[in-house]
Length: 115
Length: 112
Image 1: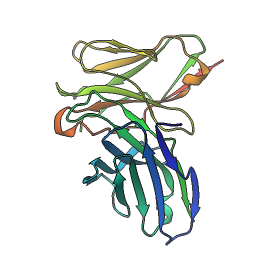
Image 2: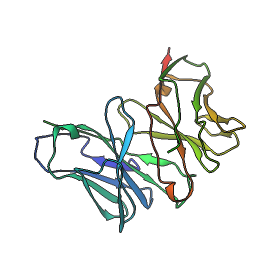
Image 3: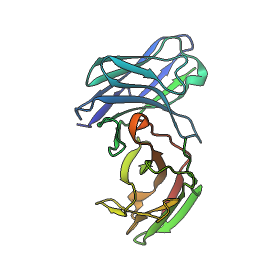
């Protein structure tokens, strides 16, 4: 089993629909992240969570919300999907506190298409 | 945020060494240099990181210039599986250590 599992892998949804992307991890890491990747661009941070009660907005949080249901689970929701939210979404985890000596572990991604 | 500059693309022959450069002239004294790679249709994968000294692991080596304004990721023997986009990223220590800011990276093509 993968260390970081994202579901679904692919999803097509209609404009205005609510959709949830789920992420679970077996790394035992406290920190979890949601990123978005658009063609030709690098990954951009949507939300991050340092623990279950600590959730923070990233650089592009508008139109998104998150829920940290447990240490191992972090979900991303699009309350009312719009076409420019069509992208590849990645969940990631990391250990550590106040140090840059740990690497991130990424999931395989969810390809979301909003029509 | 400290920024990095990488070539858009590079090519290598299979089984040859590959040197992927990264410039980071505005690096601060507490920034770590991280490298990730992203294979097609996959999430980014951690490769290696370092602060001042050269580093080796099972995947690659990282050579850091003495003034820390540049670094080079070295793949000792490229395989077809190494074809990916390689990202050089500066990560601050302390409160901002969670930050992992991706640029456009270098797309490495490996020729059989």
